[in-house]
Image 1 (spheres, rainbow, N blue to C red):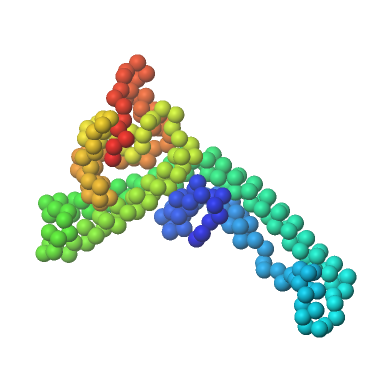
Image 2 (tube, one colour):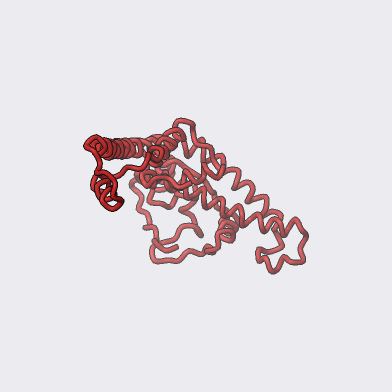
Length: 255
C-alpha cells in the first residue's frame, strides 16, 4: 500500500505490518488508517465549471449566457472545494505528525513486544536450516545431488535472510526515531559486536560475506549473538563492555 509521505519515517515498519510479518498495536494501526483516509481526500465531487468557462461555452454554442445565480453556484462550489482541501491538508499534517510521534513514543514497546518475538523465531529457524546444511556447503551449485531436504534448507536460508533484513529495516526505522545515547552502533545487531571477528577497527574491512544468506551463516557460525535491543539495552551493554574510564577503539565505517 502506498502511504502518504508524512509517514515516510515509518514506512519500513508499515511494510512489515502489511505483509503480515508483525501486527501493529490497534491504536497505532488506527492512526495510520486515519492518515491514509485523509490523504485519499473526499469522494470525487461533481464537476465544477469556472464562470469564465461557462461564458465561453455559451458563446461557442450559441446558448444563453449564464445567469448570476449559475455563476454564484459554481463560484461557491469552487470556494468550498478550496476550503475543504485546506482543512484536509491541515488535519493531514497534524495527524501525520502525531502518528509518527506515536511510533516514537512506542518505539521500545514495539521493539520488545512486536519485533523481538519475530526476530527470535527467525534466528531459531536460521539455526535449524544451518544445522541441516552442516557439512554440505552453502553453494547451491554444489547441492544439486544433495537430498531434497538439504536443497530445501538452502532455499529456506535465502528466504529467512531476506525476511531478517526486512525486519532489521523496520527496527532501523524505530531506532532512527529514538536512537541510543551512548552506543555508537557496534551493539546494533549483535550483543557481542565488540568481539572479533565482528568488531571492525577503524580502517579495517569486514570479513563477513556481502550475500545476505552467507553473511548470516557466517555470523552464526562464528558465535554471533544476534539480538534486537532497545536503545536503553544497547546503551547498557555499551557501558558494561566499556566503562566510562576505559578507552575504546573507534568503530570503522567500513562494511
